[in-house]
Image (cartoon, rainbow, N blue to C red; front, side, top):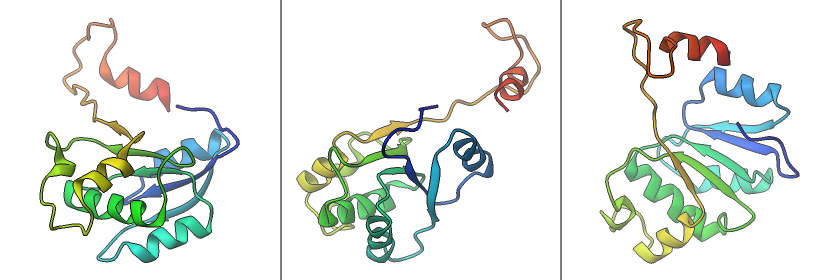
Length: 145
């Protein structure tokens, strides 16, 4: 987990996991906003900009990611002043697909995504066997709680 910095106001997009929000709070991050995008993105992005949110944690599918990053491009919420961290379990070159879904070009989406950090899920075994590290997977979870 990162350490708080000058820009520690954070948004947790989509369905925020209570454990993550609690961890961020414990580490001194101020969770400025938690939000879900139901059908419209612009209003939500305006709120983020108004609250000066700079670190954005997002969990949304490819189609929503295209819409959200298109709006981020339109509103200037990308580049050095912003850090996006999103679940990146998307198909290869997902920002190049379905260009008509979002009203941005692929180049505008690629520009908005520059510097974005995409993450992946790390599935843990539940069978209780000792892993390569010499411990069982539930020990990893409970040692981080």
